[in-house]
Image 1 (cartoon, rainbow, N blue to C red):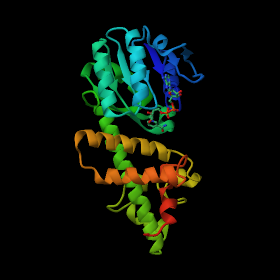
Image 2 (spheres, protein in one colour):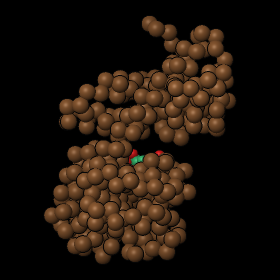
Image 3 (spheres, rainbow, N blue to C red):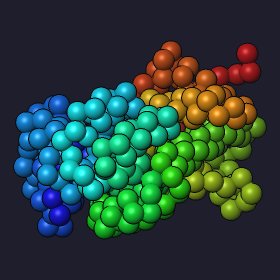
Length: 290
Ligand code: NAD
């Protein structure tokens, strides 16, 4: 297949390389001067999109996505498919999908979970929104770049699933970190705390697979000085998207709201910028109730 790939950063770069390695003809474009193994580079987004059977975008946010939509949709051929894998707000996802429909293009919003490691290994999870026809055409590429793709519903449903998942992730990470900090103050050994909680009703992905306490549980960013991993500012971005969606749909999300506030403080005034999102534990460690 002829594929255009726009946005070749930390995630897009290895995803595009995997498509090329699988034998597809991939033409890429990024604002930055990048090279991708097996991918020929175009001079612009529209040039990468022109004549492609499928265009994939992997961009920082909804505003940039809307700008790129304006540029590439006129260049895309009718009946082609546009898969946007960026994490953006639901409203932007739906707006560009409408625009694509008008241009005769099948749009699929398909944000991912699995991080840079998953992108390189081709083991991402895709959560997709869009028509059955769009999802069916995108599926062979999901199989190359990932291990699982769930068709969540109409346009925007993929982004909705992504931000709901990450709202749970942010809230659970905070709960796990504050529980460790409380356990410390109660004189409980961290390994014992892990042994109990990881096999009791408090277990979670953040405790069992990504334990924020160094030297406890499986290898995680806490064992590497809290180098990300998944950076606190990316967690903040996703939590903000969840609160934007909650606002626009009138959903009551007090825990998501509290988590957003805490990550905002952590990133903006408490030195969390550039650290893994599990570095909430040393933050709680240092504090009392006041
Ligand atoms: P990144 O900043 O490394 O890559 C984004 C790329 O887009 C950059 O190379 C940038 O130059 C390019 N770009 C920006 N504007 C452009 C334009 N107008 N035209 C062409 N290229 C343009 O970000 P990333 O880590 O690759 O993340 C991409 C998306 O994936 C984000 O929405 C992020 O939230 C999401 N995501 C990231 C991770 C992760 O672990 N990094 C995990 C899941 C989802």
